[in-house]
Length: 558
Image (cartoon, rainbow, N blue to C red):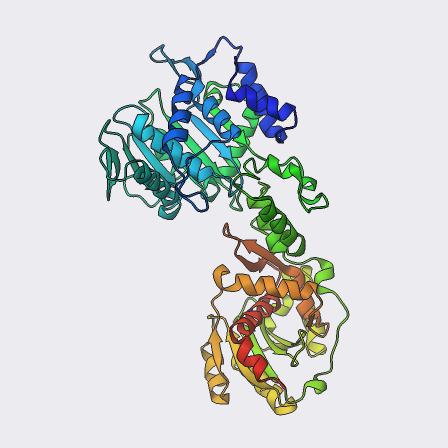
C-alpha cells in the first residue's frame, strides 16, 4: 500500500523533509494504527477531495492568485489521514470517519487559511447533501478570513453563480443544498445550529470555549462531522493552552479514551529554541522547516532569515517571531529590557544645554503611582537624546511596604532632588507644569511640545496653558505606543539615550515588562503590581512625541 501518509513519513526518514518530534510521533502513531483491527484505512474519500482541490480550486492571494492549488505532500498526508481512517459507529454499527476533531498547529504564512478554505469549499460542492459548514473564529473579522477565501475560490470556479450563490446569510450550493456561513463569539443565537463541518481559524485568539462549545454541541446528532481548529501559537492563556495539552497527551499515547481516538493532532513545532538561532553562512537553518512545512514554496527562506535577524536585535520582535514563526508559546508579558540595555555610564551637565529646545512627556497619577515628567534635548546632526527627569509621589506612599520590597527608595531619591514628596494622599499636578516653567526660567529650556496621557490631566493642562506651553494627548494603547517603545528600546541598546544615570529612571526601566498582542503591537506593563514603571512609560511617550514632530523639532534645533 502506497499512501500519502506513508510517503510523507518516508520522506522525513530519508531527510528529504525535516519534521519535529511531535509530527514524527503522530505519524508513527497513525502508521501503527494502519494494522489495527479497530480501523480500516480507505482513501477514497480523501482522494476525491484532493482531486477536486487540485483540479478545480484556484488560489486567492498574491503572488499566486488565480493559479491552481497544488497541494504539498504534508497537506495531502493531512487530508488523507483526516478522511481515510474509518471505525465502527457505536450507534449505527456502520463504518464512519474516525476523526471528528483536529488541531492543526502551524506557523503563519504557511498556507493554512487557503487549505482550510479549500477543504470547506470542497465540502460545499461534493461533501454530501444538505450539510452546514461554518467558518468560525473568536470574532467576525477572524471568521471572515476563511469565509472570504472560500467565496473567492467559489467565484473562480463558478464565476456566473450558476451552481452557487451568496447572500447576506451565507453561501449556498444549488446542486446539493449545502450551506457555508460565518459563526463567531459575536454571532447571535450560536446555539441550536446544525453543523457538519466547522473550521475555527486563529484558534490562539480564543480565551475560552465560547465558540467551540456551541459548535461541538451542534454535532450531537451526527456520526459524521468535523471540527478543524487551526492557527499558530499565541500570547493569550486559555483555550489553546488547554487544547494543546489535551492533544499532546494523544501524541504521547497518554490518553487512550474513546474520545481521544476521534481526535487528530497535527503539530508543526520546533524541538528547541536553539534550532532557531543556529544558522548557516547564509543566515538560515533547514530546521526551521519543523514549524514551517511550506517554507521554500509558500513562505520564503529570505523572509524567515530577516525575521530572525530582527529578533536578535529586539525583545518585542523576538517574542513575536518565536511565537508566530516558530510556534513557541510566549507569555503575553515579560521583562522589556536586559540589565545591560539600561545600565551604562552616561552623564551630562544641564548647563551645557542652556537655551535649548526641548520636548516634554508626562505620565500622571493622583495617588497610587508616581507622576513622571521628562524633557528631551537633542543637538543638531546628533542622534543622541539627553533626558532630564523628575518624579512626584504622595507622602502617604512612603510607608508602602510593597513599594520598598520592589526596590523603592523614595526618601533617598527625594534627598537627591530626583523626586518631590507631596503632602497628603494625592499629587497637585499643577506642580508638573511648574517644573517645566522652572526649566525655562533657570536654564532657558524652551518647551516645543509636551505629550501627556489622558488621566488626571485637568489641573496640569490648565497650568500649562497659563504658561503658554503646547500639549498633545497620547493615547495609552498598544497601537499608539508600539512603535515608540520599539524605537526607544533600540536607542537604549545602542547607547543613544543619556538619562544622566537617574536612579528612578533606572528603577522604572528595570520594572517594565513588554506586553504584546497577537499582531505584534506592544505596550509597557508592570512585571509585578508593586513595581512602578511611570518613568519607563514617560520614555515611550516622549518617543511618540518625537516621532510625530521630529521634522519640525530637528529643523528648529541650533
